[in-house]
Amino acid sequence: MKIRRRNIVLFYGKILSDLCASFTGLYLAYYVRFNYISFHLKPNFTPPHILYLIAFFFTSLCWILIFYLLGLYDTSKRHYIIDELYDTAKGLIFGILIALLPAFFYRSGSFSRLVLVIGAFFTFFLINFYRFILSLIIHYFNKKGRGVVRVAIVGGSEPGENIKDKIEKDPEYFLIGQILEKDTEKISKIEILGNSNDVENIVKQEKLDMLIMAYPLRNTFEVTKIIKKCSNFNIQLRFLPDIGGLISSRIGLYEIRGMPLLGIREFPLSGINIYIKRIVDVVISIIALIFLFPLMFFAAMGIKLTSPGSIFYIQERIGKN
Image (cartoon, rainbow, N blue to C red; front, side):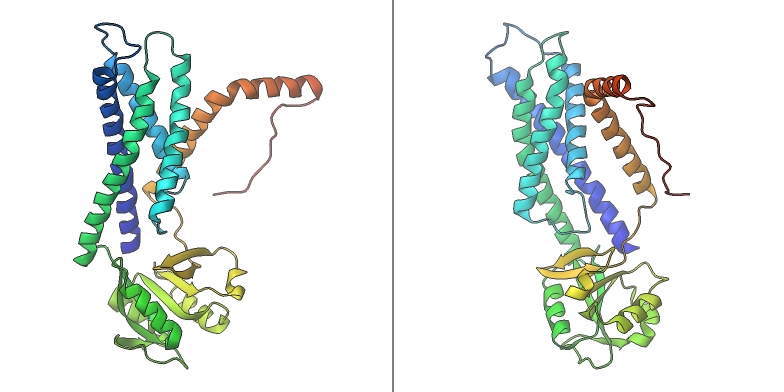
């Protein structure tokens, strides 16, 4: 599906962009530190190049994992500039703290921790610069009609007019037309695609990626009808939020140009994303276990000495298969 492909491209594009920014920022800090900042350096000192490359790789990996956990690579939601700047700075700080821990235990040679600190500053500006370039590229292709989300509005009247105004201002979306529902009025200046009884054929013919309902989620009969008709299609359904709808489970909050929308059909992890999540889980777990091992060891000893039975809590869980 187009939305899925688009999100995958954005996901990997952001990761690649951040990796390039991280390595560039850290390597630039390495050059500045040993060419222009000479305090605490011995005369004719030659820094161990391979050691710093390993440190840069580890630090960049920490940053990418933290950005992932902070949701900076969530392509299904819009990221506002202020929030993204704040989360990026927070992620860089946490990543530096994690990366500096091995440096404090390293005693085989000289390692300048100042390189990592300076690198974080350079990386902050480079990451945001690269993301700005990436957004310009995405905007360019959106203007050409590439990678846009094809949308139809189900229903109409005043809510439909409001939805139409918001969509037309967002280059990531392309409004195909309106699917009429009973007791709803035509939306001005957009094509009528048909009525809701023929929604399956409309979705196939127009290659729609998203349907937005111009009536609240509490309209149970209409909502159920649309969901059943679209159950065999990989299409996203969005509804106008209301109190009754917000009580529903398994819903997500989205927005287009400040207009809040509810999503009740989310794509599960599939394909390579399953393996990426598994790799992220394992890597984070290994890093956490390394640094928490001393605490966990003494806690385990305390449990063994003060209570009978195993130090591990074992429980059967229900999951996949």
